[in-house]
Image (cartoon, rainbow, N blue to C red):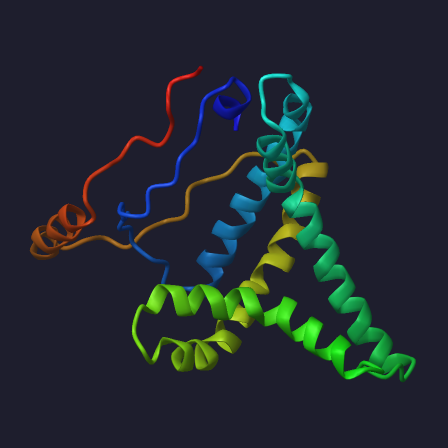
Length: 196
């Protein structure tokens, strides 16, 4: 973000893949997400730099959206919890009055997940696989709400130190396969151009 604010141009390279060890425990995954979310809260201080005159309008809007995304996600999580509680306690109907409201809600809720899963598949049956996978993917993405809440409490209370998430030991026998997977990824590509 600081490079973009200094006038560098960011690019996206879809041919590059990064292989890393996944986490095999929900507890460690949650801890990692809390750490990442707290980093996002800390990055909100970069909003001041968005209004520097070197940035194009679209770059400013993209930067603002990127930096306020944690707040938007936290508001969404709080709204979800409040709506469920209201539905249970006050017997507020949890269904829309009009069918088009339901379609918009479902499109906004599940559309991005389905689109991402379809685009990742690249096969004729990808849309069907995406429809099956979108529910577990959506539940997995709800980890974000709790991680954001915990991370904002940590940030506001001044708890900013972290230990990296521990990884599994890699056997020497697996090392050649990991190196081969890294070479398939295509190496690295430049991620930013020089400043104008």
